[in-house]
Image 1 (tube, rainbow, N blue to C red):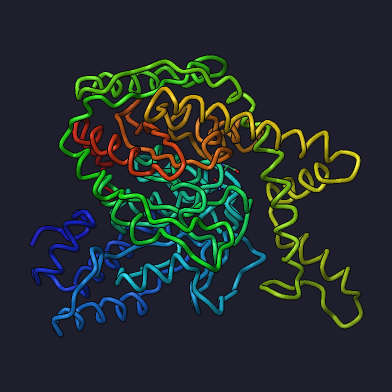
Image 2 (image 1 turned 180 degrees about the vertical axis):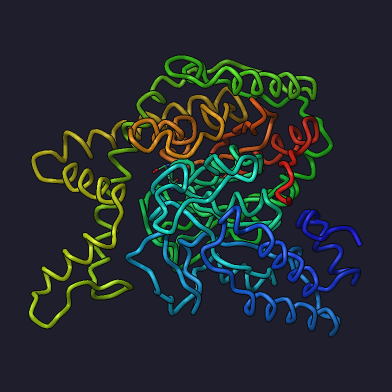
Length: 494
Ligand code: GLN
């Protein structure tokens, strides 16, 4: 039998449904792969081998009993360690949650279980999803399977690397400013951020509640769409969840695979080309992909989005403000770590010793920034102003979508960078999300698809669509994939 770890999720589901391999065999193949390569990659913080085998056997029993299997039944999946998993350690990449075993499943995880996917374990990430490289994980970075001396992107670098390294065909990420799309881009995989509210935040450890969006990571567009459909949809437990049907993303991906984009208008944001822009190698791959899309019948239209240039500064006020409030719950009383509780210290002292020891430098930087931006006297000047900019960016998107079907850009300005090269200057790290952040502020969907190499490293192509038109971006993404193919990293063996 061909190597099960090289198959797509769609192929694996078909193989299991036909009985050519059992879900248990598929799961064991992936667990073996993790054992073989994760010492080098460090995509996982926790592998739940027993739980995975159990889940796989349930699928096999269901099949044996002649019951109907869902489209991803028996397919292994890795979950970013920011989503709660009942009884299974969940750290959000932070020391402050070391050893915490949540008493409940997040909605996304619950839906994965109901669909019969097999959860292999929890993946590494920047602490509380703040970062673009996984270098801010309290448990050490993840290494990019393309070059182990380089970052796999962040904050969801573990999920993207697990998929790129064939440790899992699918993974879950979360995207607040780019944390699904940017890791997808730099690892040569597909990463999609659904419309905000299209996937539930219940049980997602909050970073910035008005931006956080769970979404799929995969090696093909169709696989991402299949996972999207399984994990998305209204959830009464999340007040910002959209009470509407999931856009038909799988159908759209299949339609796109035919490679016909006749009549589809792609908007090229003129402002993205100005200013700091992207590396020449990234721009070259991006323009080659545009040419390929034109051959499929798409029309390129230049559109202006004059406020996109203010997205990064607005994001770095809104996200830290929300995180300063959200992270107040880590007080040494309710979850995980507690430091200095010797019976003589006050609650306040224990709280501050716990937070001092439990949070890393980037998290502290954001809490301080956010607390300052929200303080009375500065609120209007910083947080209030940033919210106004957010409205202007939304208006730019709305105006653009009157002229075009989707917007396109490179996903990231640069390819995977070497470890340590951007940690000394926070702004250099923040620039990784220059092209992804506008979408989060607007709330629409965005996807990154591999479109080629620059200096031997993957380049991502970003497609952004109107809110609840996630299917549109999948169609274009699948068409692009049909034209340029998927990317295969160098072997990790030997
Ligand atoms: N890199 C961005 C940040 O550090 C986005 C992170 C994310 O999407 N979770 O905030």
